[in-house]
Image 1 (cartoon, one colour):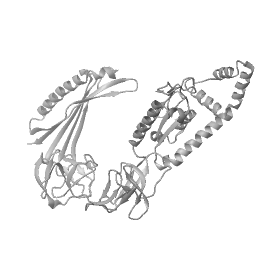
Image 2 (cartoon, helix red, strand yellow; image 1 turned 180 degrees about the vertical axis):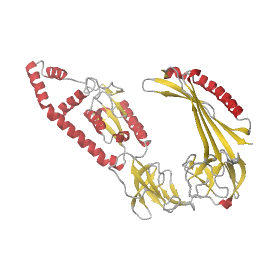
Image 3 (tube, helix red, strand yellow; image 1 turned 135 degrees about the vertical axis):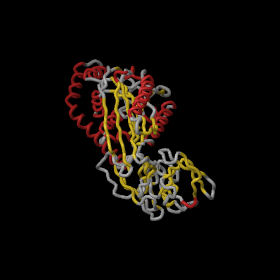
Image 4 (cartoon, one colour; image 1 turned 180 degrees about the horizontal axis):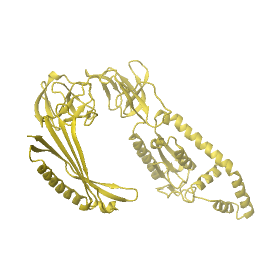
Length: 490
Protein backbone atom coordinates (compact mmCIF):
# COMPACT_ATOMS: atom_id res chain seq x y z
CA UNK A 1 0.00 0.00 0.00
CA UNK A 2 2.90 2.38 0.75
CA UNK A 3 4.25 1.88 -2.78
CA UNK A 4 0.83 2.71 -4.24
CA UNK A 5 0.55 5.90 -2.19
CA UNK A 6 4.14 6.87 -3.05
CA UNK A 7 3.36 6.40 -6.74
CA UNK A 8 0.20 8.46 -6.41
CA UNK A 9 2.12 11.25 -4.63
CA UNK A 10 4.87 11.26 -7.29
CA UNK A 11 2.36 11.38 -10.14
CA UNK A 12 0.43 14.13 -8.38
CA UNK A 13 3.64 16.10 -7.86
CA UNK A 14 4.21 15.93 -11.64
CA UNK A 15 0.63 17.12 -12.30
CA UNK A 16 -0.48 13.84 -13.87
CA UNK A 17 -3.24 12.95 -11.37
CA UNK A 18 -5.41 14.66 -8.74
CA UNK A 19 -7.52 13.69 -5.71
CA UNK A 20 -10.72 13.42 -7.75
CA UNK A 21 -9.12 10.85 -10.04
CA UNK A 22 -8.03 8.88 -6.96
CA UNK A 23 -11.66 8.87 -5.75
CA UNK A 24 -12.88 7.68 -9.17
CA UNK A 25 -10.38 4.81 -9.17
CA UNK A 26 -11.61 3.81 -5.70
CA UNK A 27 -15.20 3.87 -7.05
CA UNK A 28 -14.20 1.42 -9.76
CA UNK A 29 -12.33 -0.83 -7.33
CA UNK A 30 -15.24 -0.84 -4.79
CA UNK A 31 -17.90 -1.42 -7.42
CA UNK A 32 -19.40 2.06 -7.07
CA UNK A 33 -19.52 2.19 -3.26
CA UNK A 34 -19.35 5.95 -2.68
CA UNK A 35 -19.11 5.64 1.12
CA UNK A 36 -16.18 3.23 1.01
CA UNK A 37 -14.47 5.24 -1.75
CA UNK A 38 -14.82 8.44 0.26
CA UNK A 39 -13.36 6.68 3.30
CA UNK A 40 -10.39 5.37 1.27
CA UNK A 41 -9.74 8.83 -0.17
CA UNK A 42 -9.82 10.33 3.34
CA UNK A 43 -7.32 7.76 4.60
CA UNK A 44 -5.10 8.59 1.66
CA UNK A 45 -5.19 12.31 2.42
CA UNK A 46 -4.54 11.78 6.14
CA UNK A 47 -1.56 9.51 5.50
CA UNK A 48 -0.03 11.69 2.78
CA UNK A 49 2.36 13.65 5.10
CA UNK A 50 3.87 10.33 6.22
CA UNK A 51 4.07 9.17 2.57
CA UNK A 52 5.86 12.39 1.56
CA UNK A 53 8.38 11.96 4.36
CA UNK A 54 9.02 8.31 3.49
CA UNK A 55 9.37 9.11 -0.21
CA UNK A 56 11.91 11.86 0.49
CA UNK A 57 13.91 9.50 2.71
CA UNK A 58 14.03 6.99 -0.13
CA UNK A 59 15.22 9.68 -2.58
CA UNK A 60 17.91 10.87 -0.14
CA UNK A 61 19.12 7.31 0.44
CA UNK A 62 19.39 6.65 -3.29
CA UNK A 63 21.17 9.94 -3.92
CA UNK A 64 23.68 9.31 -1.13
CA UNK A 65 24.35 5.83 -2.50
CA UNK A 66 25.14 7.20 -5.98
CA UNK A 67 27.41 9.85 -4.49
CA UNK A 68 29.27 7.53 -2.12
CA UNK A 69 29.70 4.65 -4.57
CA UNK A 70 30.01 6.44 -7.90
CA UNK A 71 30.26 10.24 -8.15
CA UNK A 72 32.97 10.65 -5.50
CA UNK A 73 35.11 8.15 -7.40
CA UNK A 74 34.64 10.06 -10.68
CA UNK A 75 32.37 7.32 -12.02
CA UNK A 76 29.55 8.02 -14.41
CA UNK A 77 26.10 6.63 -13.59
CA UNK A 78 23.78 4.90 -16.06
CA UNK A 79 20.53 4.06 -14.29
CA UNK A 80 18.17 1.57 -15.94
CA UNK A 81 14.90 2.02 -14.06
CA UNK A 82 11.57 0.21 -14.30
CA UNK A 83 7.98 1.11 -13.42
CA UNK A 84 7.78 3.23 -10.23
CA UNK A 85 11.59 3.25 -10.24
CA UNK A 86 11.35 5.72 -13.12
CA UNK A 87 9.57 8.23 -10.87
CA UNK A 88 12.35 7.80 -8.32
CA UNK A 89 14.94 8.19 -11.11
CA UNK A 90 13.47 11.58 -11.99
CA UNK A 91 13.40 12.63 -8.33
CA UNK A 92 17.02 11.53 -7.81
CA UNK A 93 18.18 13.40 -10.92
CA UNK A 94 16.52 16.60 -9.70
CA UNK A 95 18.19 16.16 -6.29
CA UNK A 96 21.76 15.68 -7.55
CA UNK A 97 24.08 18.11 -5.78
CA UNK A 98 26.35 19.68 -6.92
CA UNK A 99 24.15 19.93 -10.00
CA UNK A 100 27.18 19.54 -12.33
CA UNK A 101 27.06 15.84 -11.50
CA UNK A 102 23.87 15.71 -13.59
CA UNK A 103 26.17 15.78 -16.64
CA UNK A 104 27.56 12.42 -15.48
CA UNK A 105 24.14 10.78 -14.96
CA UNK A 106 22.15 9.04 -17.71
CA UNK A 107 18.83 7.25 -17.40
CA UNK A 108 17.10 4.57 -19.50
CA UNK A 109 13.51 4.29 -18.32
CA UNK A 110 11.58 1.06 -18.96
CA UNK A 111 7.79 0.89 -18.58
CA UNK A 112 7.67 4.47 -17.39
CA UNK A 113 4.60 6.07 -15.79
CA UNK A 114 6.34 9.48 -15.91
CA UNK A 115 5.39 12.29 -18.27
CA UNK A 116 9.03 12.80 -19.30
CA UNK A 117 12.59 11.68 -18.58
CA UNK A 118 14.20 14.40 -16.44
CA UNK A 119 17.82 13.44 -17.15
CA UNK A 120 19.21 15.47 -20.04
CA UNK A 121 20.93 12.28 -21.23
CA UNK A 122 18.04 9.89 -21.10
CA UNK A 123 15.43 7.93 -23.04
CA UNK A 124 12.56 5.52 -22.40
CA UNK A 125 10.97 2.32 -23.68
CA UNK A 126 7.31 1.65 -22.90
CA UNK A 127 5.59 -1.30 -24.55
CA UNK A 128 2.21 -1.75 -26.09
CA UNK A 129 0.26 -3.29 -24.43
CA UNK A 130 1.41 -2.59 -20.86
CA UNK A 131 -1.73 -2.86 -18.71
CA UNK A 132 -0.14 -1.02 -15.77
CA UNK A 133 1.46 1.94 -17.57
CA UNK A 134 -0.72 2.65 -20.61
CA UNK A 135 -3.79 3.80 -18.61
CA UNK A 136 -1.83 6.24 -16.39
CA UNK A 137 -2.77 9.84 -17.25
CA UNK A 138 0.07 11.86 -18.79
CA UNK A 139 2.44 8.92 -19.15
CA UNK A 140 4.68 8.88 -22.22
CA UNK A 141 3.32 7.17 -25.31
CA UNK A 142 4.22 3.57 -26.04
CA UNK A 143 7.20 3.34 -28.39
CA UNK A 144 7.83 -0.42 -28.58
CA UNK A 145 5.92 -3.67 -29.06
CA UNK A 146 5.53 -6.35 -26.41
CA UNK A 147 5.10 -9.95 -27.60
CA UNK A 148 1.86 -11.90 -27.26
CA UNK A 149 -0.62 -10.10 -24.99
CA UNK A 150 1.81 -7.65 -23.48
CA UNK A 151 2.83 -7.41 -19.86
CA UNK A 152 4.63 -5.21 -17.37
CA UNK A 153 7.38 -7.22 -15.64
CA UNK A 154 10.95 -6.18 -16.51
CA UNK A 155 12.32 -9.68 -17.14
CA UNK A 156 9.36 -11.80 -18.27
CA UNK A 157 7.77 -9.09 -20.44
CA UNK A 158 10.28 -6.40 -21.50
CA UNK A 159 13.44 -8.51 -21.75
CA UNK A 160 11.52 -11.49 -23.12
CA UNK A 161 10.01 -9.53 -26.05
CA UNK A 162 12.24 -9.04 -29.07
CA UNK A 163 11.37 -5.41 -29.90
CA UNK A 164 11.57 -4.04 -26.34
CA UNK A 165 14.72 -6.09 -25.64
CA UNK A 166 16.49 -4.70 -28.72
CA UNK A 167 15.51 -1.11 -27.92
CA UNK A 168 16.60 -1.43 -24.27
CA UNK A 169 20.02 -2.80 -25.28
CA UNK A 170 20.47 -0.14 -28.00
CA UNK A 171 19.51 2.63 -25.55
CA UNK A 172 22.01 1.38 -22.96
CA UNK A 173 24.80 1.27 -25.55
CA UNK A 174 23.95 4.77 -26.78
CA UNK A 175 23.90 6.28 -23.31
CA UNK A 176 27.19 4.61 -22.38
CA UNK A 177 28.69 6.17 -25.50
CA UNK A 178 27.43 9.62 -24.47
CA UNK A 179 28.82 9.26 -20.94
CA UNK A 180 32.20 8.18 -22.29
CA UNK A 181 32.61 11.45 -24.22
CA UNK A 182 32.07 13.71 -21.21
CA UNK A 183 35.15 15.51 -19.90
CA UNK A 184 36.89 14.23 -16.79
CA UNK A 185 35.74 15.73 -13.50
CA UNK A 186 39.39 16.35 -12.64
CA UNK A 187 41.63 18.99 -14.22
CA UNK A 188 45.39 19.50 -13.97
CA UNK A 189 46.38 21.72 -11.05
CA UNK A 190 50.19 21.62 -11.19
CA UNK A 191 52.80 19.99 -13.44
CA UNK A 192 55.88 18.54 -11.76
CA UNK A 193 59.22 17.82 -13.51
CA UNK A 194 57.77 18.02 -17.00
CA UNK A 195 60.04 16.58 -19.70
CA UNK A 196 61.57 13.98 -17.38
CA UNK A 197 60.75 10.39 -16.40
CA UNK A 198 59.52 11.77 -13.05
CA UNK A 199 56.83 13.85 -14.78
CA UNK A 200 53.71 13.90 -12.58
CA UNK A 201 50.72 16.18 -12.09
CA UNK A 202 48.42 17.13 -9.24
CA UNK A 203 44.70 17.44 -9.94
CA UNK A 204 41.72 19.33 -8.58
CA UNK A 205 38.02 18.64 -8.95
CA UNK A 206 36.27 20.93 -11.40
CA UNK A 207 33.18 21.66 -9.31
CA UNK A 208 33.04 19.63 -6.04
CA UNK A 209 35.28 21.28 -3.41
CA UNK A 210 34.55 18.42 -0.97
CA UNK A 211 36.71 16.05 -3.02
CA UNK A 212 40.50 16.15 -2.91
CA UNK A 213 43.27 13.84 -4.10
CA UNK A 214 46.54 14.57 -2.37
CA UNK A 215 48.56 12.10 -4.44
CA UNK A 216 50.66 12.69 -7.53
CA UNK A 217 49.11 11.39 -10.76
CA UNK A 218 50.81 9.74 -13.75
CA UNK A 219 49.75 11.90 -16.76
CA UNK A 220 49.53 9.43 -19.66
CA UNK A 221 46.76 11.58 -21.19
CA UNK A 222 46.11 14.61 -18.93
CA UNK A 223 42.78 15.47 -20.60
CA UNK A 224 41.34 11.98 -20.17
CA UNK A 225 39.89 10.09 -17.20
CA UNK A 226 41.26 9.79 -13.67
CA UNK A 227 41.41 6.25 -12.27
CA UNK A 228 43.76 3.84 -10.50
CA UNK A 229 46.07 1.24 -12.03
CA UNK A 230 48.79 -1.03 -10.70
CA UNK A 231 52.41 0.08 -11.01
CA UNK A 232 54.13 -3.14 -12.10
CA UNK A 233 57.50 -1.85 -10.91
CA UNK A 234 56.46 -1.19 -7.30
CA UNK A 235 53.28 -3.27 -7.09
CA UNK A 236 51.39 -0.27 -5.72
CA UNK A 237 48.00 0.95 -6.94
CA UNK A 238 48.38 4.57 -8.05
CA UNK A 239 46.34 7.26 -9.81
CA UNK A 240 46.67 7.78 -13.56
CA UNK A 241 45.15 10.17 -16.08
CA UNK A 242 44.61 8.12 -19.22
CA UNK A 243 42.07 6.88 -21.73
CA UNK A 244 39.92 4.19 -20.12
CA UNK A 245 40.86 0.51 -20.27
CA UNK A 246 44.19 0.43 -18.46
CA UNK A 247 44.77 -1.84 -15.46
CA UNK A 248 48.59 -1.86 -15.19
CA UNK A 249 51.45 0.43 -16.17
CA UNK A 250 55.13 -0.40 -16.48
CA UNK A 251 58.57 1.09 -17.10
CA UNK A 252 59.81 -1.74 -19.32
CA UNK A 253 58.22 -3.25 -22.43
CA UNK A 254 59.12 -4.62 -25.87
CA UNK A 255 59.91 -1.85 -28.33
CA UNK A 256 60.50 0.81 -25.67
CA UNK A 257 62.28 3.88 -27.11
CA UNK A 258 65.02 5.89 -25.44
CA UNK A 259 62.78 8.86 -24.65
CA UNK A 260 59.89 6.73 -23.29
CA UNK A 261 59.53 6.15 -19.54
CA UNK A 262 56.14 4.62 -18.69
CA UNK A 263 53.36 2.88 -20.65
CA UNK A 264 49.83 1.98 -19.56
CA UNK A 265 48.19 -1.16 -20.99
CA UNK A 266 45.05 0.52 -22.34
CA UNK A 267 44.21 -0.06 -26.04
CA UNK A 268 46.03 3.18 -26.96
CA UNK A 269 49.20 2.14 -25.06
CA UNK A 270 49.65 5.74 -23.90
CA UNK A 271 53.10 6.71 -22.68
CA UNK A 272 54.95 9.20 -20.51
CA UNK A 273 58.12 10.38 -22.23
CA UNK A 274 61.31 11.97 -21.00
CA UNK A 275 63.10 14.77 -22.83
CA UNK A 276 61.20 15.37 -26.09
CA UNK A 277 63.77 17.68 -27.71
CA UNK A 278 65.57 16.37 -30.76
CA UNK A 279 69.38 16.67 -30.93
CA UNK A 280 70.12 19.91 -32.88
CA UNK A 281 73.07 18.29 -34.65
CA UNK A 282 70.75 15.83 -36.40
CA UNK A 283 68.86 18.54 -38.28
CA UNK A 284 69.49 21.43 -40.64
CA UNK A 285 67.33 24.30 -41.86
CA UNK A 286 66.99 23.96 -45.64
CA UNK A 287 64.56 26.81 -46.41
CA UNK A 288 62.79 29.80 -44.86
CA UNK A 289 59.62 31.69 -45.80
CA UNK A 290 58.53 35.24 -44.86
CA UNK A 291 61.66 35.80 -42.82
CA UNK A 292 61.46 38.38 -40.00
CA UNK A 293 57.66 38.61 -40.15
CA UNK A 294 54.64 37.19 -38.36
CA UNK A 295 54.51 34.31 -40.86
CA UNK A 296 58.19 33.37 -40.63
CA UNK A 297 58.52 29.57 -40.84
CA UNK A 298 61.33 27.18 -41.74
CA UNK A 299 61.68 23.72 -43.24
CA UNK A 300 63.98 21.33 -41.37
CA UNK A 301 65.61 18.14 -42.72
CA UNK A 302 66.82 15.13 -40.75
CA UNK A 303 70.42 14.57 -41.87
CA UNK A 304 70.22 10.82 -41.26
CA UNK A 305 66.82 9.96 -42.76
CA UNK A 306 66.35 12.94 -45.13
CA UNK A 307 62.86 13.37 -43.62
CA UNK A 308 61.66 16.98 -43.81
CA UNK A 309 59.32 18.91 -41.52
CA UNK A 310 57.71 22.08 -42.87
CA UNK A 311 56.04 24.97 -41.08
CA UNK A 312 58.45 24.93 -38.13
CA UNK A 313 58.35 28.01 -35.82
CA UNK A 314 61.96 29.38 -35.70
CA UNK A 315 62.29 30.70 -32.15
CA UNK A 316 65.98 29.74 -32.12
CA UNK A 317 67.65 28.54 -35.34
CA UNK A 318 70.34 26.85 -33.24
CA UNK A 319 67.85 25.26 -30.85
CA UNK A 320 66.34 21.79 -30.60
CA UNK A 321 63.49 20.47 -32.71
CA UNK A 322 60.37 19.33 -30.85
CA UNK A 323 56.57 19.50 -30.75
CA UNK A 324 54.53 21.58 -28.32
CA UNK A 325 51.09 20.76 -26.91
CA UNK A 326 49.25 22.12 -29.98
CA UNK A 327 51.17 19.72 -32.22
CA UNK A 328 53.20 22.50 -33.87
CA UNK A 329 56.92 21.93 -34.45
CA UNK A 330 59.40 24.47 -33.09
CA UNK A 331 63.10 25.19 -33.20
CA UNK A 332 63.81 26.48 -29.69
CA UNK A 333 65.64 25.86 -26.47
CA UNK A 334 64.14 22.88 -24.64
CA UNK A 335 61.36 23.13 -22.06
CA UNK A 336 58.62 24.89 -24.02
CA UNK A 337 55.06 23.54 -24.19
CA UNK A 338 52.96 26.38 -25.65
CA UNK A 339 53.23 29.02 -28.38
CA UNK A 340 51.83 32.36 -27.20
CA UNK A 341 50.56 35.11 -29.52
CA UNK A 342 50.00 37.66 -26.73
CA UNK A 343 51.67 38.24 -23.35
CA UNK A 344 52.42 40.94 -20.81
CA UNK A 345 55.10 43.34 -22.03
CA UNK A 346 54.73 42.31 -25.68
CA UNK A 347 56.42 44.79 -28.04
CA UNK A 348 55.00 45.90 -31.42
CA UNK A 349 57.57 43.90 -33.39
CA UNK A 350 57.10 40.68 -31.34
CA UNK A 351 54.65 38.16 -32.80
CA UNK A 352 55.08 34.82 -30.99
CA UNK A 353 56.77 33.64 -27.80
CA UNK A 354 57.41 30.09 -26.55
CA UNK A 355 57.00 29.48 -22.82
CA UNK A 356 60.45 27.96 -22.21
CA UNK A 357 62.80 29.40 -19.62
CA UNK A 358 64.44 31.65 -22.22
CA UNK A 359 61.10 33.14 -23.41
CA UNK A 360 62.32 33.02 -27.01
CA UNK A 361 60.36 35.05 -29.58
CA UNK A 362 59.68 35.47 -33.27
CA UNK A 363 60.18 39.15 -34.12
CA UNK A 364 60.40 41.51 -37.11
CA UNK A 365 62.96 44.22 -37.88
CA UNK A 366 61.72 47.79 -37.27
CA UNK A 367 63.02 51.19 -38.45
CA UNK A 368 64.61 53.73 -36.13
CA UNK A 369 61.41 55.73 -35.84
CA UNK A 370 58.07 54.49 -37.04
CA UNK A 371 54.35 54.70 -36.44
CA UNK A 372 51.34 52.51 -36.99
CA UNK A 373 47.85 53.75 -37.72
CA UNK A 374 45.03 51.47 -36.58
CA UNK A 375 41.55 52.23 -37.85
CA UNK A 376 38.37 50.43 -36.91
CA UNK A 377 35.17 51.43 -38.64
CA UNK A 378 31.83 50.39 -37.27
CA UNK A 379 28.38 51.14 -38.52
CA UNK A 380 24.99 49.78 -37.73
CA UNK A 381 21.87 48.50 -39.46
CA UNK A 382 23.36 48.91 -42.93
CA UNK A 383 22.92 52.69 -42.72
CA UNK A 384 25.74 55.02 -43.62
CA UNK A 385 24.51 57.56 -41.06
CA UNK A 386 25.35 54.90 -38.45
CA UNK A 387 29.07 55.15 -39.31
CA UNK A 388 31.42 55.00 -36.34
CA UNK A 389 35.14 55.71 -36.59
CA UNK A 390 37.91 54.86 -34.17
CA UNK A 391 41.50 55.84 -34.84
CA UNK A 392 44.64 55.12 -32.88
CA UNK A 393 48.08 56.40 -33.85
CA UNK A 394 51.06 54.94 -32.01
CA UNK A 395 54.70 55.92 -32.55
CA UNK A 396 57.84 54.27 -31.18
CA UNK A 397 61.48 55.14 -30.80
CA UNK A 398 63.39 51.90 -31.36
CA UNK A 399 66.00 52.84 -28.75
CA UNK A 400 63.56 52.46 -25.87
CA UNK A 401 60.36 51.13 -27.51
CA UNK A 402 58.27 53.64 -25.56
CA UNK A 403 55.05 54.96 -27.05
CA UNK A 404 55.66 58.60 -27.96
CA UNK A 405 52.17 59.67 -28.95
CA UNK A 406 48.70 58.25 -28.77
CA UNK A 407 45.54 60.03 -29.77
CA UNK A 408 41.97 58.98 -30.32
CA UNK A 409 39.20 60.27 -32.57
CA UNK A 410 35.63 59.16 -31.98
CA UNK A 411 32.32 60.04 -33.56
CA UNK A 412 28.97 58.78 -32.32
CA UNK A 413 26.69 56.49 -34.25
CA UNK A 414 22.93 56.46 -34.61
CA UNK A 415 20.43 54.10 -36.15
CA UNK A 416 17.21 52.20 -35.61
CA UNK A 417 17.06 48.78 -33.96
CA UNK A 418 15.80 45.92 -36.09
CA UNK A 419 15.43 42.20 -35.49
CA UNK A 420 18.33 39.79 -35.60
CA UNK A 421 16.71 37.85 -38.45
CA UNK A 422 16.42 40.98 -40.61
CA UNK A 423 20.00 41.90 -39.74
CA UNK A 424 21.30 38.71 -41.33
CA UNK A 425 20.25 39.86 -44.79
CA UNK A 426 22.45 43.00 -44.83
CA UNK A 427 25.76 41.62 -43.63
CA UNK A 428 27.32 41.29 -47.07
CA UNK A 429 26.34 44.84 -48.01
CA UNK A 430 27.94 46.08 -44.80
CA UNK A 431 31.11 44.16 -45.59
CA UNK A 432 31.49 45.67 -49.07
CA UNK A 433 30.63 49.22 -48.00
CA UNK A 434 33.06 49.12 -45.10
CA UNK A 435 35.95 48.02 -47.30
CA UNK A 436 35.41 51.00 -49.61
CA UNK A 437 35.16 53.44 -46.70
CA UNK A 438 38.29 52.03 -45.11
CA UNK A 439 40.39 52.36 -48.27
CA UNK A 440 39.26 55.95 -48.82
CA UNK A 441 40.16 56.83 -45.25
CA UNK A 442 43.70 55.64 -45.71
CA UNK A 443 44.15 57.66 -48.86
CA UNK A 444 43.07 60.75 -46.87
CA UNK A 445 45.42 59.83 -44.02
CA UNK A 446 48.41 59.53 -46.37
CA UNK A 447 47.62 62.92 -47.84
CA UNK A 448 47.83 64.50 -44.37
CA UNK A 449 51.38 63.30 -43.87
CA UNK A 450 52.75 63.39 -47.44
CA UNK A 451 55.48 65.91 -46.58
CA UNK A 452 58.40 64.53 -44.63
CA UNK A 453 57.29 60.87 -44.48
CA UNK A 454 57.43 57.76 -46.65
CA UNK A 455 54.61 55.20 -46.43
CA UNK A 456 54.01 51.51 -46.87
CA UNK A 457 50.98 49.34 -46.18
CA UNK A 458 52.21 46.73 -43.70
CA UNK A 459 49.05 44.79 -42.92
CA UNK A 460 45.37 44.79 -43.85
CA UNK A 461 42.61 42.74 -42.29
CA UNK A 462 39.53 41.70 -44.22
CA UNK A 463 36.43 43.58 -43.07
CA UNK A 464 34.25 41.47 -40.85
CA UNK A 465 30.71 41.78 -39.54
CA UNK A 466 29.06 40.21 -36.51
CA UNK A 467 25.64 40.50 -34.93
CA UNK A 468 25.22 41.81 -31.41
CA UNK A 469 21.89 40.59 -30.10
CA UNK A 470 20.19 41.64 -26.87
CA UNK A 471 17.71 39.79 -24.63
CA UNK A 472 14.72 41.39 -26.37
CA UNK A 473 15.55 39.84 -29.72
CA UNK A 474 16.83 43.05 -31.27
CA UNK A 475 20.31 43.49 -32.61
CA UNK A 476 22.88 45.82 -34.11
CA UNK A 477 25.27 44.68 -36.76
CA UNK A 478 28.86 45.59 -35.94
CA UNK A 479 31.38 45.77 -38.75
CA UNK A 480 35.06 46.47 -38.32
CA UNK A 481 38.17 46.62 -40.44
CA UNK A 482 41.69 47.83 -39.91
CA UNK A 483 44.93 48.44 -41.75
CA UNK A 484 48.37 48.94 -40.37
CA UNK A 485 50.10 51.83 -42.10
CA UNK A 486 53.84 52.14 -41.61
CA UNK A 487 55.44 55.54 -42.14
CA UNK A 488 58.97 56.76 -41.49
CA UNK A 489 60.48 60.21 -41.20
CA UNK A 490 62.48 61.11 -44.31
